[in-house]
Amino acid sequence: MKKFSAFILLLLTTLTVAMAQGQKAPASPRITAESPNKNIKVVYGQPSKRGRVIFGPEGSASLEKYGKPWRTGANEATEVTFKNDVMFGGKHVKAGTYTLVTFPGEKEWGVVLNSTLGQWGAYEYEKNKANNVVDVKAKVSSNKTPIEKLTITPANNSIAIAWDNMTVSIPVMDHGK
Image (cartoon, rainbow, N blue to C red; front, side, top):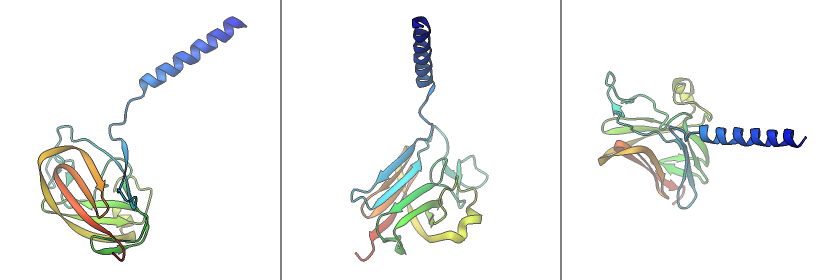
């Protein structure tokens, strides 16, 4: 019996070590970012540039095409939660959680909050666009140095989206302020 117990213990230890060594960090980890005042939370998949052209016109080798809906991250669509009612890009949005979809452009991005949660990417954008809550525009700023990893930063009064050579910022104000 002692030999059998020792064998089982050795087998379980070997399996545990093998499984731990076989697990790799995901290529696009799921990130949760919160504003300092905790009113805004953004959950997104964080892809890396890895030498790729990220934004460009239709027909280019870019990963994301100008004017096409983008999940604004990797894998599941990005979700934005507001603890309080806010003015998002100058438009009223009730407290709650929304899917973030963007339409990258060379000089301006379309930024949409949609009430359909649990989307995978933006593949069903056309089907779900009737549930758009707001659609705003955000001007593009050029980054002097390309940003390797998509970074979405909620501040107390904005949400900034930065990747590769582009950054956009959408003003967010607590409703009534």
